[in-house]
Image (cartoon, rainbow, N blue to C red):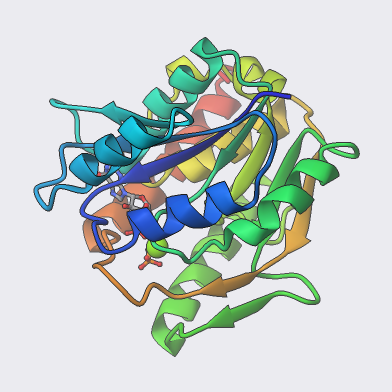
Length: 238
Ligand SMILES: Nc1nc2c(ncn2[C@@H]2O[C@H](COP(=O)(O)OP(=O)(O)OP(=O)(O)O)[C@@H](O)[C@H]2O)c(=O)[nH]1
Ligand SMILES: [Mg+2]
């Protein structure tokens, strides 16, 4: 089955080649990688472009105007659907998400429509995360669970594997988050559509190279987006 791994990037030059190499080493049949880069000033996109010249399954979606984890994710999903992906894996570039889980996630699609790499199950681990960062994630998770009523332990995980029908069902082209709250928006919409969601435990490794793009502004916008989603749902709009 045609599988696309979709990776949004902004200034990930220290990580991207390593990640792509690890994914290719899995030797999954009919697998493609698309990196969605917002013209990173550090030249991440050039690295991907060069790798794409040597390997036809590596693709670059270079965005020149828009900037944001959310709109990049949306454009990446649209790209995968347009290119006839049956399975879409979404993951970060910073090596926090180990590609070794991809085969297992794909296998779990036998029992689910959407599989999440979870940091909050028996068998999950988090390496190198400070107490404050863990607390922020825990608080956000509690807020989202209470607000949106999603019965998922790790609502914030950006490591996911979708059947095509999930992205079609939630109308990926209409996703409205500009920033990282796309992760919650997708999950909530998939939950409302009644798709089967399954979590598998992963070991999450805090980034060791490059800088995090998650700041207070993005966090605040995320909290607001969850409120907006709840409101839209109550109004019967989603
Ligand atoms: N295209 C694009 N990608 C982005 C943007 N912001 C972040 N990303 C990518 O989205 C992924 C997640 O971003 P991170 O900075 O790792 O954020 P995070 O994982 O929530 O936070 P940390 O745990 O602190 O790393 C990474 O692959 C980033 O390069 C953006 O504005 N545009
Ligand atoms: Mg990260």
